[in-house]
Image (cartoon, rainbow, N blue to C red; front, side, top):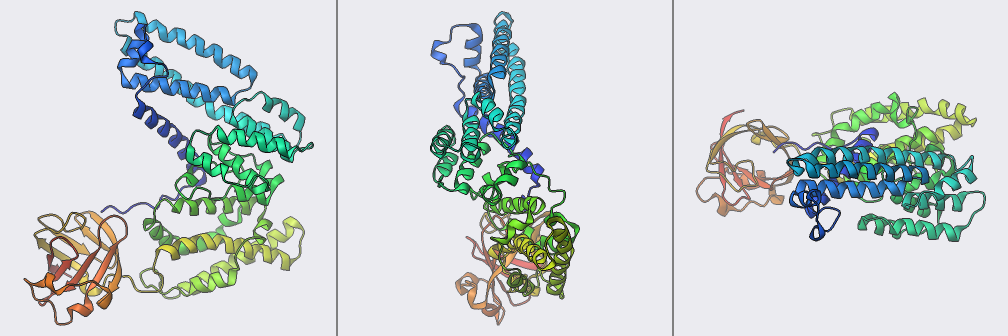
Length: 506
């Protein structure tokens, strides 16, 4: 019953996690195949035979081939020739293991070393393409020449970008090239996602390019975000509706001056943090879409906060609704007033900054500040209200809290599944030893499914049916219904076998 972490990543953490995930997926795929990059039926040398007979060596050989191919597709002519020369030299080194007493033992470190070198070279090659993309605005002809040498999907995708937005637009050719790049994506889900957008629109075109870039975790240069504006930021928003949204690279824009990362806004975030974490524990990987949106919004509030004017919800209704939350499990007296004051303070703090930065009047600057605040509030509020009951009291009732013991466990998906044990119950958690899990009151009285037949061997309290509560687990596990018994004990039902909890202390 360990409490699950919310999984909310930092921007930098998301990018590092993405690199780790890519290698993990590659390794997992290779493990599933347990086949090298060549046909073992045709293996003839001691090295080839050793690779074919050892699944780890076969996996490493396959990974090296995949990495080498990826790196070839990311490299220009000179780097591709150099890479080919290096690979041939390494193959010579690898084949020297044929004369070793144990070719398999010799091959392990040789393959591992090459795999590491190739893995570490890919981010450098991607960064080089990002540098080319960064130069499209100032030197389109030079960028075109360098991109023409890159034969993989990323080269095609950014050549398509140049053909659409460069000085000599050719939309037909741009669309054709981008479609080629999309079709080259091996991951079928990502490929279908990119194929489903409308390339006739700027944000559709850029979204497809984002998926092509995600395939190799390329962070777009901030100059692209500045040039393409709202369409580029739209392309960077949640797309997959799963943990994939966490692993896609964010633009390479600094968020040092982000309004949504300022001390003024931290006061708002701190008020929402406990509920945001709780809501994250109650949802699946869809939460990463919310985190993606938050991260992109934070970065956009540093680059050009004026862009929020077009799409942000109205601030006043958002603040009013959130300030009206009443569940005492999360909302202490005065919380709503503190939220209003924190949001107002942020808007007041940002307004003169925005006015000075863009040379606009106070009224217009305040409108921008309110739009930023509304968007910043919207993501957290949405995740919270979708997954938490913010009005009804979901705390466990007072008569249920205390220390309890039992004999005769229930079903496996309940806390009380051991033959005997002790439990501590407070207003939100059930703990068995050091293992604790969160629970919400999902129903009470008529809304709690209590069947009197489950109490055939015990005596319920006089008003047991009205006091009965159904509990829903915050994370894993099954639901429970608990009713008070005469004498102060409890009956846990909704399990394969009812369990009696005997009170040991308050």
